[in-house]
Structures are given as structure tokens and as C-alpha cells.
Image (tube, rainbow, N blue to C red; front, side):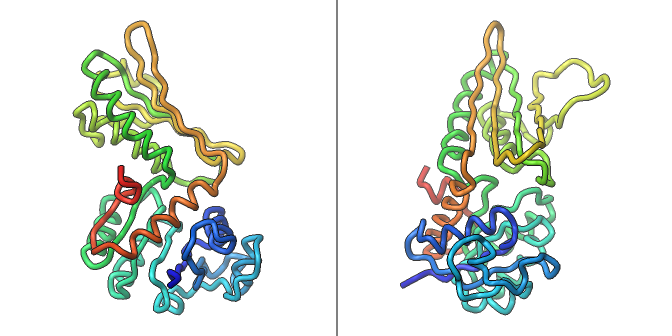
Length: 270
């Protein structure tokens, strides 16, 4: 039996990539049954497959999530922090599995997601590629070995010029992995860029630096600099399909799980 998938944020870059991957059978067993975005995007009312640059889907892009949610087994959400948290209660009521790739949620918005995960299975991750989740493990191990030996930790991320939030969700994932390895509280250690006269770097800082330009899909580097040497652990996305396929694999996996908030490490068995 096929798994019915609704894509939220269907008119965006990731949304269209997700639709293409479903329509082209990049992840077996998935069927596109809904494509949702804001009412004022140019693709509203168009066939979702054709709008995404692939074969006809037979469904039109809509702004009405409620109209397509009843037929969904899972909703894949790449919208905004406001849209994601705003739909949390409705998704809990619909009992629909949920995959969230949205980043930039506040603590209050994240609390809404966690509340929903008490009722339905939810996968939430700032990056859904295998490579970046493996990198998180490597970063944690490196920080555990090096931080106490005087190595400083910095995270550098690069994205396209339309990305709205900073640091990226992936950068925060990597920063959290480094903080876990170093035994630090990320919220207390996080330093977003430096300007003026911030003073000398403190030992407990984890610096974040966001670059925005062109059409960069996503580059991330964790730098660990110590006496006389520097280590860089990096990941570069060369195709948005890598992220989309990860999200769709999460969609196929999460529909079989009990209510809980899961990460991509759960999906990948890491």
C-alpha cells in the first residue's frame, strides 16, 4: 500500500524538490496527495507536478491544508517557524504523522511541536541528509577529545541569499553536537558573529558565522583550533535532492512509529 504524502511549503525550493522526488519514484511507496502553500504564491491552482517541473500529479496546489490533510498519512513541512507552530494543534487533532524540516523555531514554537508529538509521531531535524547526521557524531567525538585540551570551536555556515534565518538549523545541530562533546550549555556558549570590540574570545564560546550569497544549497564547517594546529570537519550539499530524499525516507519511516519526537538519527539508526 502506498503512503499518502502532503507537502507543506510546496511552492518553495525544497517543496518542489520533494514533489519531483515523489513523482519520479526516488523513494518507493510514496504517493503525493496534497501540495500546500500560501494563498498568494504564483503556483496556487496549478498542477503540483507541473509547477515543480516534473510529470503531472493530478492535484492542484492549494492554500487549504485542512482540505487535503484528511487523506494524508504524513505531512512533510518545509514552511516557516510561524506556519509550523501554528499548525501543530491541528495536526495533533488530525492524528497525521509529521516530518518537519523548518528551522528557526523559538522555544515557545518548539514547545507546540513537542506537545503535538505526544499525540502523533514527529520527525524534526535541521538537516535530513545521512552525511550531516554522521558529521554530528564526528563533531561530538572530536569536541570530547579536544575541548579540554584547549581547542576553540567555531561553526561556519553558507547558504543562498534567500535564506531567512541564521544560524541555520544545521549549524545549530552541529553546535549542539560540539557542546555535548565539550560538556557545554549551547545557549550560554553561543556567540553569533563578532563585531566592534567584543573582547578576547572566552574558552566557553562556540562561535557561529553565517554567510549568505548566490544559490549555495548548504555548506557547513566546524573548526577546532588549538595550539599549533587546526581541524576542520565539513559537509557540502551539492544537490537539494539529497535533503529531499532524506525527508521522504523519514516520512516513510515515521508513519510506522508510535507518538514521539524523533530525530534523523532515529530514522537512520545512528
